[in-house]
Length: 269
Image: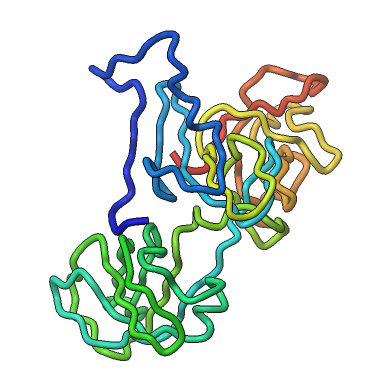
């Protein structure tokens, strides 16, 4: 992975000619343990029918029709290693054992591309930037983070900061009540470290769960993810408990006899 900003691709946009017979979208339904050189984790594709996909990497298996959980954790919470001035587009931290534990090893070059850096949590001093690349390093090493925009405030050495890599770099694995969901995988993902596309917006079939039938009563049109990645109609759960809204039911089905698991997925447009 090279240093750089994420790309967005609008398939079939105005003035772009596509063949009626060509398999234009085949790449979305491919998965591999080898990263496609055309894409980086977090890149976004939007199809003409409004469906949106993100290129992702798995942290474990994900079944088709089930929510893909964000399984990444906070990589770093510590201090800046050196001062940075207004206008700087990089900042330094000192790697520690906790960072290596969270990432699984010492950081490799540009592995943080697509991540988030936040510093100065005292209100008026807060700054957040995207990470477009990094130098390699581990416990005790000075690691440079390259930012997607210049700093608007000076940052003193020793300023508290937090950092995470791309949330799309760790999808799947064990779900539960302490995860949120990125969307629905375009294909079944059978293991960790697989590159694939996850749908984040648009119509998709999603597994109804918990012994409930979403849409089986009047006004029960909104659905939410539950801990295993399936969906419940909000009539069957207490939304105030904090369940993540997945979208709304598309098909007309007054008694729930045929589902309805077809939803307008509304996670990330």
